[in-house]
View 1 (tube, rainbow, N blue to C red):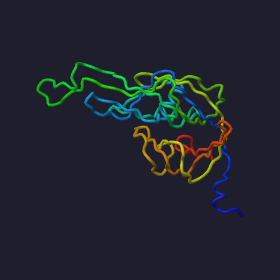
View 2: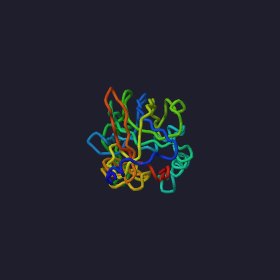
View 3: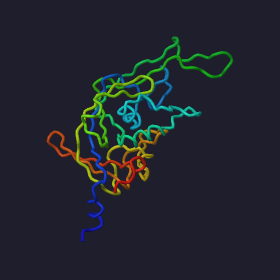
View 4: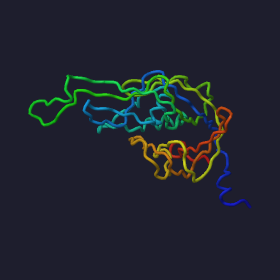
Length: 247
């Protein structure tokens, strides 16, 4: 009998026919995403994280600009509609990581020559200038998509972002995968979608599910493909809370 380790490694194939694609997103428009806002002597400076949340990408792939019920009474998106769309379409996209970055700091607001102004008798000061670090055309991001669709039916261009829509060109490559158990992931994952993903390195705090790296997933996909003549591999957390258990 094989050892328990080998039995865990060689598992059954999924009972539903989900294809897996490695996708390269190439920025064709200015991508305005920011994760942190820091006050400096120049004004507020917004910094972009090297990861794009998978719900933004899912909405773009399904032809939506923002979630239908974008905000609740507290002003925060619920993302319930986004999850329903993913389940209905059987199309799950993983967070995208920046592979090639061409970024610039641009000014997006300016009122006067000073750093801040004091209005009326209030003690609050208001920054008069703001800057955002954006991804320029030519930047590249890498992600993976689980879907029943053929790659010819997937969109070649998508738009993401709730304020200034960034245009991404998508290039798809079908890759092999198999289910494995209790493995360290090597591509970022959404903690809400994976459900049993052990705490990893936090990359992005998000109301739709925090994005982490280097966590351990009880259910995972071992992925393999050939890139420039070399065999490449990665481990993806399986989104069991979104697509259900397939074993």
